Each structure stands twice: as structure tokens, then as C-alpha cells.
Length: 147
Image (cartoon, rainbow, N blue to C red):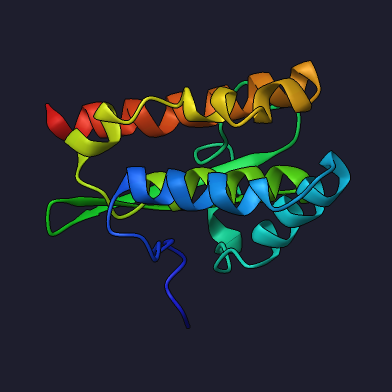
């Protein structure tokens, strides 16, 4: 079985942010961007069913979102899933930026890039709050790893 942890192609969080922004710029309208984000979610590694429980659930999300993290070689590897297609895509975006990075890099990478890309405003208030909750959960886990 393939690892459930996302292995982003970019070497740094900033490179991932730049690649995502570049990809989103290709699309003229938000429906095409939504489709692109949904497609990203469809390519997430398979999330183990055993992790789809309350212990892995991210609070503050309207849809069900589950995440897991593991530290290896000084990096925090992240896995995630959602029961909603668009949210799975948002999970994929976040994990592309944050997975496989040292905790210090995760903490230094402000999730403001989501707002700068227009993703927060383009989403419903609940989804915007949910992605903020996901980013907060990732950063809180990184902070724990730094302690």
C-alpha cells in the first residue's frame, strides 16, 4: 500500500505556494478553479479508514475532515481526507504546502497565502472557516513537535 502521507513535489513550502498560485492563474473563472481544486483532492493518497474517527477529526469544519501527522527525519508528514469533494481539494492544497516540511518551516509559513490567492473569499463562510481550522490544526501540531 502507498503511504497515506502527502509527498509534495516542491522542495519548500514557498515553492509549493508559488506553484499553486501559478496553476490557479491559468483559470479565468472560479468554476474552473473549483474543478482544479476538486481534482487535486481526488489525487490525495488513500487515507486509512481506521483514521476516520473522532481522534483524527479536525474541529471547526462543516464537512468531515480528518488529518494525521507523523514525524520522520526532522520533518512532519501529513495525511488528510474529507467527505466533501471541494474540501478534499482544499486539504490537498494545504498538505502540498505543509507536508514533508520541518516544523519550523511550517510555523514560518503563514496560511495568509490562502487569502492572497482569493481562496478564502471565494468559499462560503463555513468553508473559509474550515480551511482556517485545518491550517491552525497543522500549525498547532508543528508547534507541539517544536516543544
